[in-house]
Length: 342
Image 1 (tube, rainbow, N blue to C red):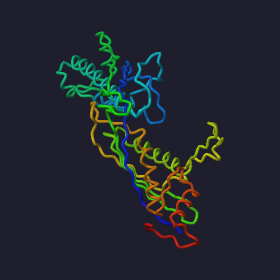
Image 2: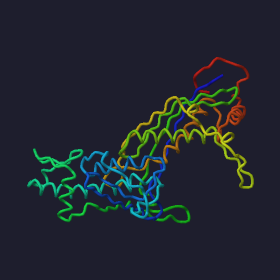
Image 3: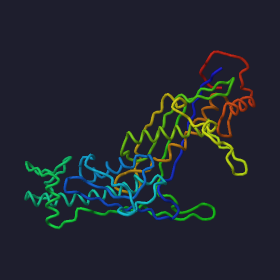
Image 4: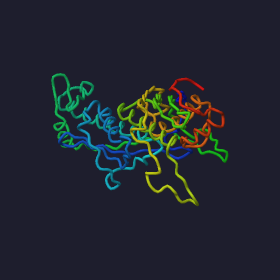
């Protein structure tokens, strides 16, 4: 017999560096005479969509420049400042705010030069995709940058952003302000459990997140979907067996990572904006938290379907079957598929 159940779990995840460690990002942005904008930041994109975030936020900081005109120069400590490590779900918050500030500073330079060329007040100048406009006057970016160079005005600006201070923790793990920012999530999972074999199928996941303002919706949805898939593996299939500190699992034929065939038919990311405690952009970290509540949501759904608690991960068919047997919920014969709670 197959039974369905629904479970949910909520979580919060601290973002940025914690426990008294200073969290600062430094970046540089340069305008070129051919009308492009270059980002210098020696950061690492490890698949979370960092480049897209940098380009979008710089475009916004510049006042509406097309992201197509923006390029992230190959990160190198030889030519780029230090934005800090890629970790702690900090890149959008800390580096993003620094990039936005750099864009604002460079925009002010562009507007000032354009206003002088046209002979209008700076407030009359607007940035529009790939040019600047004041009434009927239109200036190409290259012309503005050439004039800035002629006047000796630098077209490479630096900016920095520092997250709010945190405090160290004591021997009991307590502190006045050990973490300066949290993201929140609630995941709801629907599962189907075969009570004859203990097999579990995750049918649907609704993943609701508060990570502040979402900069790149498509990337954010992908981040949540990937986190759900990772959590699915930790919950149901992935087990690293060690003996004397040496892995006994030597290949992916026995360390079972979920594939697209194991993923739920429906993963529904939803976002709410609870605001951010600091910064100009209202953003918070999203990177890690999608992996956190999904595990408990799935195991709670297994309990809802069967009345049996699985307390050792992964919840393999054998462990689920044994948990059901311990509470007398194992089927002894084939029955029609039915929905409902144990």
